[in-house]
Length: 604
View 1: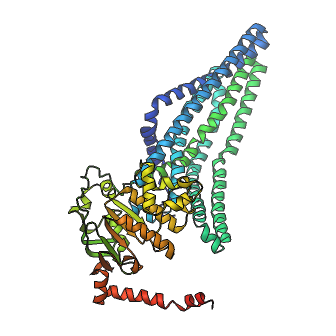
View 2 (view 1 turned 135 degrees about the vertical axis):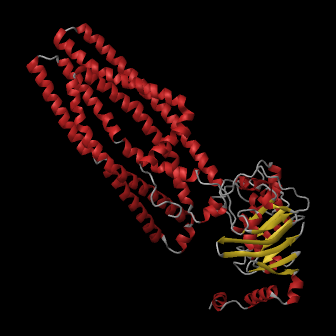
View 3 (view 1 turned 180 degrees about the vertical axis):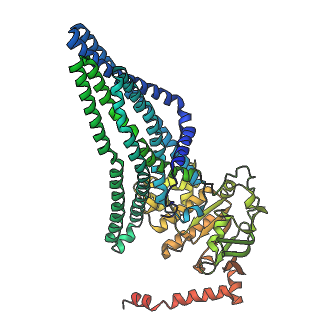
């Protein structure tokens, strides 16, 4: 998948660096809550150790002193210990969950903010599903990693320390037996860490590919149905799902591979403890309470010891997601903050291209010294063959990309020297592929000027000749548009987009093939709306259908990244140059359609 590194460099030092950064950026901000959670974990650990110690006292009082009153007292203390442990466990679990949710929200906001700071080029070679996967996996991974470290230190390590203290107090020699499991466990786990890290990366990539396939299937469902691609998409999805299933199964094997050895070693250690303790009690007359207390502490210590032993495996898997998060957050913004630059100040809204050069890829120029002027309050049309650079010129006016040479001036101000927000605030854009956001028709019109009143929204819709069809819906302006506006027709979407541009009341209008995909009736209605939109504003429009720009105040023919002709429609026809050739070619196509089209039209 583009944009995803083949393998994240998460060696030991990298992992430690990531953990330090997590504590510096996230844990430090929540140190008070973490300290409280840690204290509650310590209380729970102390209660666990105390309960193991009390088992020995109960046995001694039952079989030695035969004191029922003392046993009742110890039973009451045991109830209190377990109740306290339960409350402490509840408290630290809730606190950790609340901290985790806050960190997830913070990371999601940071990632969305960083993505919005990127330029258009950043997204062109990446699939949107990659960012969805990063947003989900990365934001959660930071909380998981911190939770693993803090829970291991607070719950497992403190519990282990308390229980080991009870064991050493009761039987120092027997405590050494527990160390038998440590060397082989460490040797095994070091080999598993690298495997777990690589498998976790494969799981992330597989999840992103599943999202990609599902997203493309749903967004292109009309094409899928039209071309009967159900089996193809089903096979693609099945392949991706099978891949992540294999990775998940491998993770299950790797992550749990330590269990057989650990359990076997633990069994030998417990058996040795039982034999030695039995010998001490039977042959030497040692206190049975000591034996029971030690066994209880040993058994209780086994689970936190296992969790600590596999901490590095779980942490390595979580840190893969942390790196996914930081890859986005640490990336340089494609559109650095420029609010310190002066705002664009308009007087006439005159747009000038002066020797502009630009290329998307090195060595493949798209614009070559492009120069033209869009006069204030007039309609300027850009025509020419596909790939000539017309749409690129509009993108450069909005500073979606930065030019390589030359200058783009608005009222004599170089747009590279003003803030992007002030520049884009003066421009209304309507393209061929209209994008509507999830929500109602009212919401989508109001996006042109957030906070617009109901009267302003209705006025804009009327000016865009959209009010009548909006009111024909039962819900009127509250009608949901569906994903990408698919519940509306093409002409309706275009008029909503024009209303969105009208309510913005921008002095500069950019129109990129705004009627190219419409039928004749819809095109006429949209053309009327465009005429209303362009009144008194500096308008630059692109059109392949030359009849839509015949009344433009000035037409520029853009070819191979240059303006090769300019003038009004009649003037350019009289010259007999490139514009006249385009115009004659379109007339011939209308009068003499291709044989296949003519045959279809005649029913042949």
